[in-house]
Image 1 (cartoon, rainbow, N blue to C red):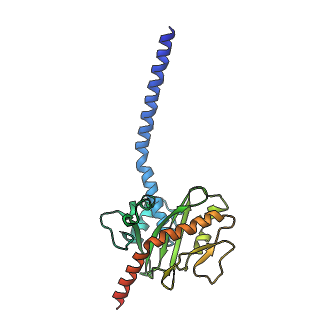
Image 2: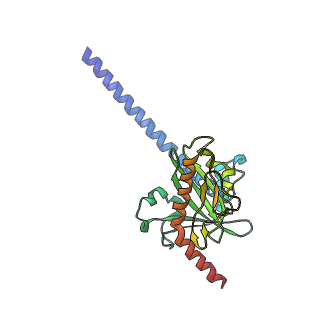
Image 3: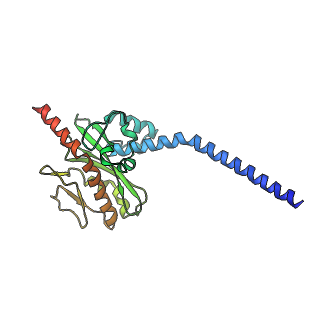
Length: 247
């Protein structure tokens, strides 16, 4: 009787495990398209935020449709370049994962560029950023004017920085400091410093650090420098092309 009882328990447990596993697999398969759609929409939204668009997302009847429509209207070109500044064909810029790319040898890295056209006809060049804060990854996008030097806008996000401290990098007021800052000085790449204690008002290469978020601020500064310096040759060649067209 005891052996039969144990066998029943074993069979019952096995069947339940199989059923639960099947249900979880079904749920994962069913939900995956929705999860992918959410990821795609959030990425498009972050890109748009770097050029000050999609401000009405909170009141949009359908977030996916609104963000997708704005993205298709504003982003007129997507391309991939290498560290030599040359275009790379056959790679979808939207699917490029910087974490994967930065793990490669420098000569094999793919770097996405998103080109936005504003209402006044001007073009902005949007570049992805990836780094590390105090508690985990931080990321974002920074947009440059067509001089490939002056910041037009920036959007930052994080996974788990401390609320009220490091998490303030996602605050619009913090991000607005970057507008008008420059990443080159006398044609030399200098990036943007995130200065503890505050940047001087006339400093075109620095912004105020997050109060109480020293490590996150340093991580943000490193992220901007490490990512943007990868595009130096692209900036250089793009400027040369622009000058040739002007001549």
